[in-house]
Each structure stands twice: as structure tokens, then as C-alpha cells.
Length: 194
Image 1 (cartoon, rainbow, N blue to C red):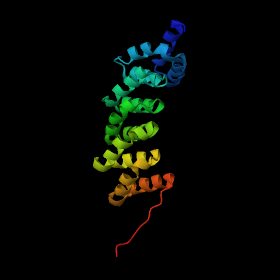
Image 2 (cartoon, rainbow, N blue to C red):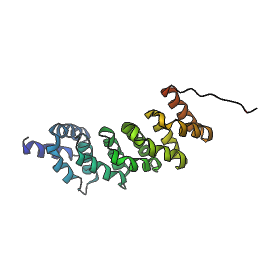
Image 3 (cartoon, rainbow, N blue to C red):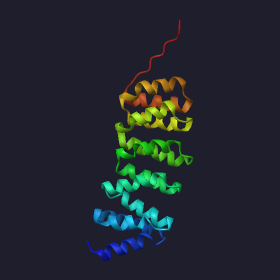
Image 4 (cartoon, rainbow, N blue to C red):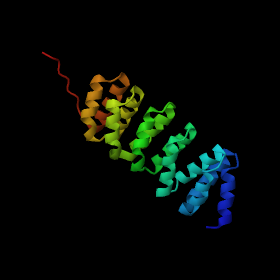
């Protein structure tokens, strides 16, 4: 890789023009892990837009250090950075981030919560124990996101918790439980008390 190319792409990444920045992010991603040090340096910028674009580009380069940086931004005060980090971890799922992502199901920015749920779905069965715990003990908003995530992961280990949530949950939780059971091919039998 030519270092002048990387410098040019970094300059375009921070140009303030979203289309130019997106093209630069794709070009930087194509350069692979050799571009990571420059991106990680840009993550320390005072400019929130530069940090966002650096994180977005790093998300496209599969590497443990990318995952660590993405995970560190899950707790950023800026919801745009939390969204970007969660989306990035959806591209390169990281089991070490599960706990942080599950906490984000209760984020005050509901789009952050939804994206976190999508990322947990991409992570798959490894997220199931933490999601069950949230389904059983989380806030009402987090329980809905946990039910949705469990339904779309489709792991049979979640069936007992999903059934309990269906019996006691809101209509949204019931919807997601029924959706999950249908996807898993689980029939629900209803018995009326004698």
C-alpha cells in the first residue's frame, strides 16, 4: 500500500462531504489491516464526525483490534457513535461485546437499542443466556428487544423463557414470542383449566 494513498483517503474521510467520505471509507476498508493504525489515531480526534467516519471504516476491517475499538465506543456519550459501534459489531460479531450490547437494549435512544438487538442476533446463540436474563429481569423496553432478539436467533434453549414471557408479557413480547416459535417450528398448545 502506498502511504500517500492512505493519507489521501483519510483526508477524504474527513472532508465533510458524506459521499466523498463513504467512498474513502470503502477504499480504506479495501486496504485492510494496514490502514488500522491511521484509523485508530483518528478515533482520538476532537471532531465527532471524523471519529464517526474512522469508526465506520474500522468496522469494515475484520481484526481483533477493530472489535476492541468498536466495543469501547458502545458506551460513548454520543448516540451516533453508539449506533456506529453497534452496527460495526454486527459486521464483525464479537462475543466479548455481548454484555455491553445487552445493556444497550435499555438505551434511551431506542434506535441504539434496536441496532444493539440486531447485533446480538448476528452474534447468535452465544448471546442467548444474557438475552434470557434480560427477558426475565430487564426493563419493559429491554424485555421487548430481548424477546425480539431471541425470536430471531431461534435457539431452542430459549423456548422455556420465551413461553414464560409470552404468558406474562405485553402484546409486543407476545408477538415476538409467537414469531420466534413459528420460525423454530414450535407449536403452542393451550389448555383451559378444568
